[in-house]
Length: 187
Picture (cartoon, helix red, strand yellow):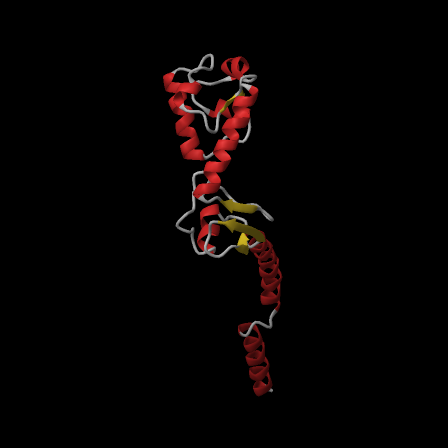
């Protein structure tokens, strides 16, 4: 009888130590619940997006990226830029979006686009914020030398203005100045 008790106690201890007991089953329920949360969290951060890059890059194409990828990383995936690339119009720090197309212009394409923008700007008499030099910016009411310099600096740091309201991102240009110039500017 004592042998049976010893075998029975040994068996129960073995079951508890190897994970077959009730406490372990309860722990498994909690850990699997936590595991599901972790998996879904990982799934969110591992979202695959596809971005197309073309133009003056060595290997144009469509590349799978995750949702935290920046433009400069896509350029690296494409083998970098060619020797005739012009990165002036590319915000390399920008986060990419799914199905985005990135075009890296050649220097020739960029000159052609700037000339076209200047021509369209002069046709309607508006100052194009993306190409205007300091002297042209100074013709706008409320824009002095320091604000003109800030506009040019903004373009160099952030790329082209995408809408005329973006000029209010410049220090010292708020709603009042914008109202004075909004009919005199374009992008």
